[in-house]
Image 1 (cartoon, rainbow, N blue to C red):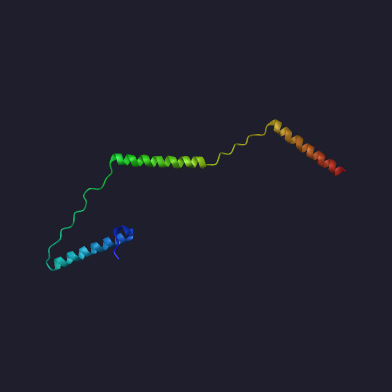
Image 2: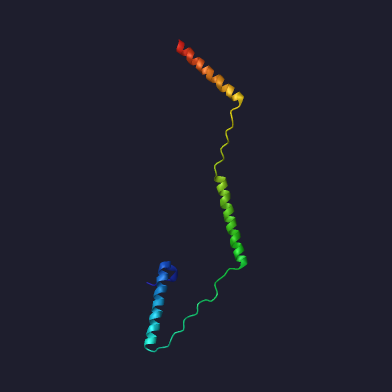
Length: 113
C-alpha cells in the first residue's frame, strides 16, 4: 500500500525526515570509511519566504473585518443595561402609605368583629 505525503500526519513527516537525516549521516560515514566520494550537502534555501506589503495589507484588512463582525455580534447579543432605580417620589411614597393604612384598617376591622 503506497501512501502519499498528503495522507501523512505532521508527526509522521517529522519522523520520516529524522530517519532520512540518519540515513544520510550513515551513508556519509560509510563513504568515508571505504573511500567513496564525499557528498556535497544540498544547499538550503538561503532566502526566507516573505510576504509582499500588499498581501500583508489584505490579510490585515480581512482580520479587522472579522473582528468588527464579531464585535458587532457581541454588542447585539449583550443584555440590555438595567435601568438605575431612582429615589421614590413623594407622590409615590404617599400612595404606598395610603394603601398600607387602608390594609391595616381593614385588618383591624376584621379582627374586631
